[in-house]
Image (cartoon, chains in turn red, blue):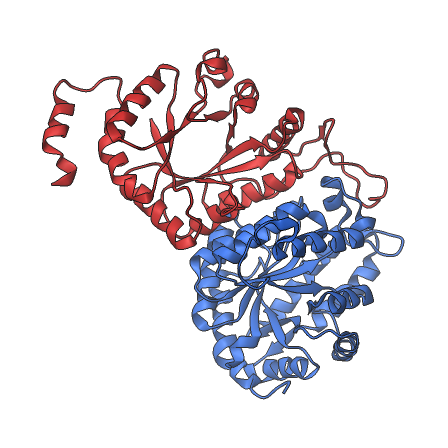
Length: 264
Length: 323
């Protein structure tokens, strides 16, 4: 199980830096930035954090399917370069038109591979080959620069996007109240190892442990925990150690509960 | 006000070319290091360009590169020269610009350009010949979003970021004056042309600052630098520039003429000689110098040496110019 801290409501660079640092210091994998009125561009925030906090993954959840997906892919590639490969791009359908989202998702995937591509869809054609653009007509385009690692880490979010994620072997984030069984239980070969994440709340650390153990039953291997930076130590010392293994040595949890070694 | 307040550094492009290859993750990290040095020395701004879908990986998302730099610096302003406004989605641009300005503490300087490469427009499904209309429509949408139109909260509580119109065409000057923007002029203009443009801009009511790109090289190596700039421009013009009825390398004489014009603007020599050329530019009515010696073929140590020489040897000699 891996952990991303979503410091919901934080929008200043100082506060986001503190949250990412707290996540790292508690051994969490990274932070998760969700688009909101206070944080209109999580990718910009991710790029701004790149040089301020080392090591942690930075997930940016954006909407996809409204503006041109090539533009989104370019922004993700540059942000991932600044992050030296630490970006997780999480795409949520911008509208109810799932066919637009599916095409956008495929354009982002194609664009992030190190080869020229051509895409002919119902919503986008890349390159468009408009007759008015007379100079140097192209059959294919190449996103330059590409992301730094062999692949961009691309997830989807939102129940509607789930079948698309499974089909394509992409990571997928479900909501705290979504039924994980529908779809995720019938994983194809292509996606059996793709990240499966769920949004979690942190009220009581041991209650979250129980929930994550239950999550493991349907394959959950990432937890996106909405919590303030001050919750990072509990996540790191109480929750994370208890959900990594299939089972722990008898007596270990009782030892932790009694001695609370992290508090000594 | 110190002299450095009117001097910025240009132009980061993040290119990895045949002449100056580099791993892009290295180039972005170095941009951060370069900007930190400029920030420490007190320069007013760093400027980055935008192009897309070309082999050299010229930065297609300059606002995201600037966001990275914003996180690493304290006070230096973060400029685009140019952000190709017609090639971006207006709503997305408004959100992105507002976020960058907010996270950077109001340090964004938005140089706005039209773009000119057909393959860039075509990749995005846009017609190059609509770029003027797209420029106005997108700027309208961006400004409306910043002003909080439609009953929404303004995305930023700060004053709207400063916008600089790129280019030298009469339409660009008129657009800048009409919309209350500054001007950001290319390095290829003669002093007479600069004077005429500034005069025309002021006559049309333009009241914002006028900036200009100026290429320099201080001390030894000026000739070699100019030769390499010439090759850099030749590659760019040969690959990209549409002439009257031919394209790029098919028009070698026109390219040679344009390149010679570009190279003639490079101020080389010792600090006093370079300062003299920059003083002339300020005297012609320019308020901000975006000084360029950063190219992909200039190694980082040489680049930092030039940044130091500019700050310590050249800029103090600008005192009193353009008063």
